[in-house]
Length: 526
Image (tube, rainbow, N blue to C red; front, side, top):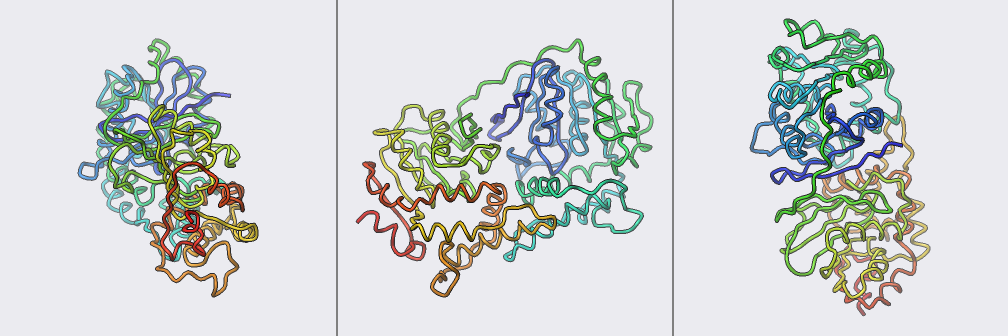
């Protein structure tokens, strides 16, 4: 099985995530919008025996930071950001493959830096006209804003399904119908998750592609270039628009699907790149004073976090399991801080490990050990993350100077059973019903204690939760899927209060009275 490793690299303060596999000449894969580098897993495995295959998340997609808000966000800006990555990785020569939006990024890179790009392949070059740019822009890309009732999730599911029936997706006329297989339920779910990962930013990459209608880059390419139009791809209609191209640019129509295109590349790529140099190794991470993304291997899979260096003890923040990870904007304290994406969450989600307490502690510990090998630790654990404190206290002993519990979940056996029985449905539904179920469970747990049978006594007399907060947590619930129940079962042991009282670690607890169920958090210190 091909090993695909994941990495973050700091480029002028912008954090860029990429995947890497294999050894040999460099082959850069650039994904379409609104997907990310996950889409290339099969292709990376196919070409890793021959090439060093590198697949970045383009700005604002996957786990990569977006382009600066005060700068341009057109295709040239996406291309320049990719060029900065090529430089940061030390790639003196690289072949580039791009699909749809990624094909435009790849074409700019090849046009702007012919001395570096050894070859170019585009799967579906989007040769939009000015009229199409004006037509598709706003209609294709409505804002994606969380609604209090979760209706935005149902819209998203339907929107993703519809794009397999019509192009553009909102045009239900027979003239816009596509004779291609509809997406499977799993494929629809995966595409929905790609959008949920980036939220309203999904529009940025699309908008840049739709607005791009000056195609002189293609006519000025200097390296061997192959532009493929597959049957079933709505961009096949753009093929006749590419005219007056130089001899080094071949435009081919592929009657088959993606496997047929790859069979064509199996011969073309090795022959074209035969004399190219081997790519350099993964560059080392350069420490900086600002926030940086970190990623380390652990028994729980890759574990990610945000790390800000500083003097003195390091504050380690653990978000609640089943909720969204913390980001730098959540932190107002000075000094060294490590924000952990718990295994199974955020950028640490790509794991098949069982998310029991021992595995979670091992994953958290691996990230701490990589970032903070010696300094003292101050832990801040939110919600049910309190269950990980005993294991972390045993692991770090005297290095753990203090632990703070923010609104810990402290349940009886009956309450734990009620919580687990009422969790949202995790089976993927063909109509997207699982998204709505997760949304309503997440919203209602702020209004009714989720470990009590719904009743007047279980009602919490608090403000309705912010839809943006509910949305961020719902994304994690849907991401966890069937792992949610065992995760929360492990994190809510009925004897947790006794475990915490027996710790020798200096402990503090905070919980607003409205959020402290039966005053149990405050009672920990009595």
